[in-house]
Picture 1 (cartoon, rainbow, N blue to C red):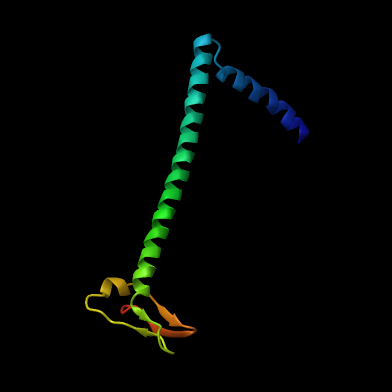
Picture 2: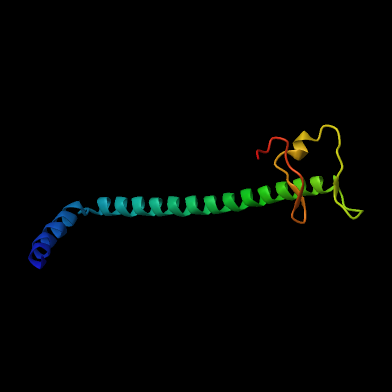
Length: 113
């Protein structure tokens, strides 16, 4: 096995030497290409991180606003929890489950069993 590795090593080195630019123009082009590639990689990662953070913050705000709107329809003044039904509250009821302890008080109208 070591003989095979020893014989293939010079072939790889020779191949890499043939690919390396020999002129100053070629070397400068390789440096410019490598720099541009690294810059694009860094900018892409930075953009994705900033966009991900912004979208996560936006989704959290939307969920907080929605939870606050749903909380206004729940009456907890007595000993039991009651949901105040209002007209045209289909949008508010979408994907909302309301529990009192472990007891389900209300679920979305389209929820399955």
